[in-house]
Image 1 (cartoon, rainbow, N blue to C red):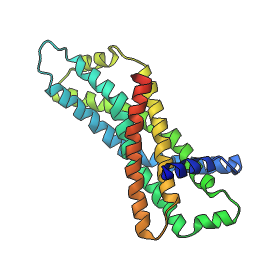
Image 2: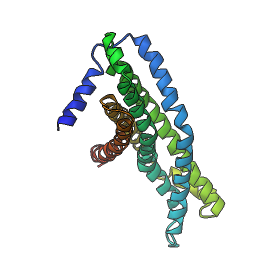
Image 3: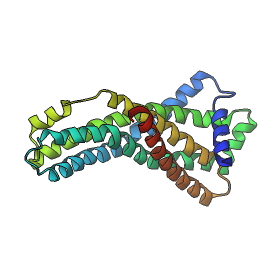
Image 4: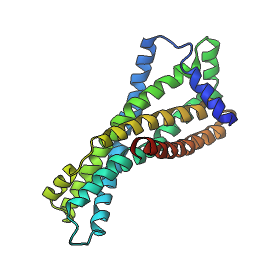
Length: 243
């Protein structure tokens, strides 16, 4: 509970004694590049193969002749939009982005760069962390949208190349009983997950003490805690917005 309270106090400091808007704009744009554009490759690979595997495995387990083939793409669509797209993508990003943020801030802490900012009268937590938080909440929904599209398209290619489902059946299944609210749900989840990954990783790195070994421990703790927070938030959001 004491660590949770320290985390909440850390969040409150992000919005007090802030710098000028143009300072945050420049930093946020740089963070969007580092977090968003530099993560597109791993998101593309993971999402494409997740969709392909989901399609192939679903087709392999649907040997009942009374079940129409378009159900395969319906399952791929819903599982990708509701879970595989937002949740798995953000867990992967937690490993990449979370460890990067924690190690960066941890190195700045042990090299006394954060202390130097505070001596200069700058709110170091707001200056260093707020742009990362905003950039994560902006770029995570974009990356999740890309992941959902590539997951569905990867399933389409896998089903077509393996002969599991025809192109017409796959497209029909994508359109069958589609609920637009699922897309909104995925976007909401990605915004929440982006907030959790950025702030938890920054919290772990910001309060690092010791040397290089402690920076490594902080980076590991950031990834572990971010993944746990994502799974808990995933359950709570599913209860609130879908259940």
